[in-house]
Amino acid sequence: MRVLVTGGAGFIGSHLCDALTERGYEVWCVDNFYLGREENIEHLKVNKQFHLSRFDVLDKAKINALFSEAKFDTVFHLAANSDIQQGSQNHKIDLQLNFLTTYEILEAMLAHKVKNIFFASTSAIFGDAKQVLNEDYGPVKPISFYGASKLAAEAYISVFVKNYGFKAWILRFPNVVGERCTHGVVHDFIIQLRRDPSHLMVLGDGTQTKPYLYVKDVIKAILIVFDKAEEPFAVYHVSNEHLTSVREIVAIVTEEMSLSGIPIEYSGGKVGWPGDVPYFEYDISKIQKLGYKYIYNSTESIRITVRKILGKE
Image (tube, rainbow, N blue to C red; front, side, top):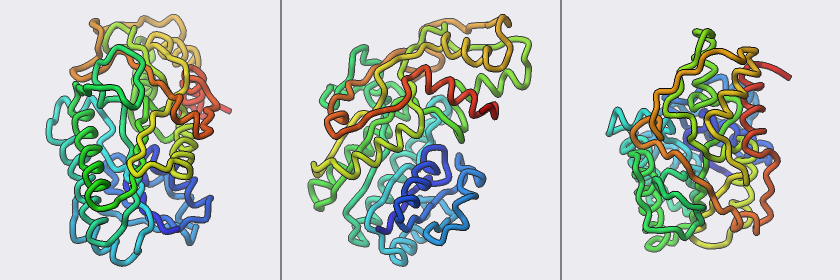
């Protein structure tokens, strides 16, 4: 199996490269290192089955040359701007890094007769839905540029499946946490407290409540959907069946950093920034029917992540 992983030096992408090389696949990682990190894939460079290409997926000439050379069986498309908050400040970033990267990958696949694509999507396509979300929920009304760009990418993939005989696996992630993360509430709290441990500033009122899934459980979900989902356009939700509030995350981070009792300042309001969704919950019965079982609940995933970042056992 010869596979391309776009965004393969990123947080989730690098873990996926680990898993695919462990399977014995020949893996090409393409990353422009906008959010990817060299250290995430340093250990893979000694593996003859792993190939690193440093360029932007939006570079048509380079992506087409790579497709021509490598003759991929499957593309795992994870390249994206995964920092939702940043998209509210720069309206073009999600258009370019989420939607247009997907479009260029689809065009390259069509030109080089590659028919299989895995796409990393998101709960953000649903916006502020206020109910348990299954794969058939609609109408879908994203409230962030990130969610809108991912939804548009899903739509284009659907058209390529229908018109050109592609096979697509789409997995809608929740909030993913774990080692190698570069942003997000856990990462940001730790960075803030390392800079100034005297107090912590929290966006919103701290009641924002969501599922947080450990990255290794996400990788398990990717592989089980890839292996077992039979629909031409296979859409699945992945999560655990537990929710964690921002206030609970504050308590875990400050406890693990031995800073319990420090002043916590909340900016106020139900959301942290424009486009933030204060609550969501997935129905994961569909992926569970494939045999998916997560290991860690949401709060366990948060604590593991904090301890990993802090370098604890």
